[in-house]
Length: 347
Image (cartoon, rainbow, N blue to C red; front, side, top):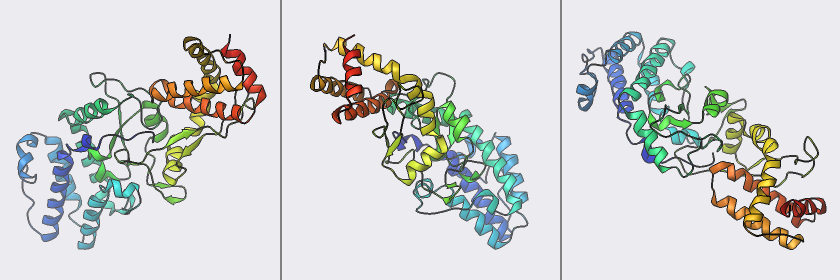
């Protein structure tokens, strides 16, 4: 991903902690043959008053209790292990540990677990947790864009809510379904057209690493291997989109969000000719009138610095990558490109 989100935005995770504690209490009581505390006493003390009127949560916890009544000791341990391991988000994404999926769990627990944690997810909005998280993320952002593509803008917190993605899909890892550590604001296209309920931890070739949205590792886009005049119409380049670093996390990022194809089809191909004319406009405003290779390279370097200063606003990170590639081609003596850019810059 292009940039990470503030981990401080995941601090208010009390609903997840409360629900996990209640589920754990139910398992231990059922396994021991003891009575499960009545509602709301099955919840941790600090949250009983706040949640006591949430009858939807009460009924789903009761259904979950009934569903696990026939489990044996090994199955109880298995489910409690999944409850813990599905929420070790950072370790799972870097493949430091693994966890069982929904289909690995005892059949009796699957649907009740999905219904319980899916309902609890809806409470994040009612309780203000979701909006608090988004406000913290939005305030921390430089450019208010999706960190997975850099192209979709986020609306302000007072607007209708942005898509909130379960990074570990709740249909596969239900016990992480209400943890804000697993919830990531995401552009609508990235969320609904590409990510959807894809298993971020497992691909066609099995277990894989993925970027942690609240971690530290990021990637950049480079177009340095692209070839001018070799694209679809003979004017635009033949694009080669690469990621730095070229690592397993980048491969997962591209596979899940289809970035290479989207950048070429939706941004680079339709935008290239316009961006060349914007370079002309910048040269005019900056009083650059390149007449030879040396002065052209100086103009290109100045424009690249200008674009780099824009960060992720207006897709400047992709525009900067385009002009880095063009400058490299000019340094390598692409006479046709040099002549074209000098001509355009002086129009």
